[in-house]
Length: 449
Ligand SMILES: *Cc1c(COP(=O)(O)O)cnc(C)c1O
Image (cartoon, rainbow, N blue to C red; front, top):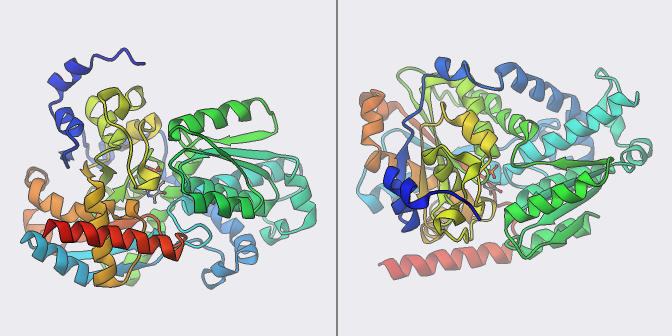
């Protein structure tokens, strides 16, 4: 399989032993640089993100036309941010640790169209591809009103092309729904852990779904092979896509506007902490990179992964990125956290984010379920298990991140902090499945008492 010297790596990086033991760990990134220094090596810039934002604005009239649920935001696919004071109080009491500052939930779980963070990057990349094709064939000009894409003429044009993607579920939902709407032939290659309701939903929207007995990496590989055989097929490469990354990064300017409207300050004396569930890395990586462009050294981004799938953390700690998988160190990559069941991280994201990421931590599935149940009880907000990974962040930082707080001189500023837990999915999950999640959380909580 791999010719890595695993015992040697464990000796060099003792944290790997904790990962192998499936402990919940908290890691501070030793190669975090100042924002200015980090940008010297960055492969993307603020201008690239602005270009993506402009493209989404061009498509807004089309989106508002074909997805009426986005009419209220004039075709902008955006989610609310809400304060969660009862949850904060619960967390504080549970651990007997006060959380200084305010606790917020960024509800990408309730993004229109596909109900997860994938509605950012996934939809963006398909729109970009559609625009490229239409421009190249002289069917569209940048100044046009893009609602004209909602026509038989355009659907017939796009039907000559196909789109393929490998997914654990949520990316497939986003790519499938928008591609089919535009008229593309779209195929989603689903890993074994993908949920049945997601496959059924996609099939009901005329998306081809191919199922595999293996995990996410295999589904991606198969998708790539099939797409390569067809010159009219565009493969969306979740492991390496610059466009997906940029689509996610647009979240930052939207969030900045929301914080301004709420009079939430972010500056030298008002640090912002953001906790992002991480699978292959594109979603959290894009959001974190975008936030760094706008808030520089005043924003502190942490990734969160399941204890059974800590692929990004493994890649970052060892510096091996996509050259190592969790299976290489004997971890099974089995977790109920759908979008996070990824064994090998994106090398592109790991290398790009290295200088910007504050740290990373892991959370057990039991812990995810417990937090899921509690968020329902405290705030009446229902999420899918993956989306709770960020919720463990604020307490972990306070309990295990004192080195970080000291190193960056944050102690006196914590009372002015804003903590944003990025809730990455949930609103598309059928009611009866949400109920099962809640029951699991309840059972786990009762056992712990
Ligand atoms: C995909 C996904 C993530 C993580 O995004 P990556 O780009 O895979 O790192 C987090 N939460 C949910 C619910 C997702 O579907």
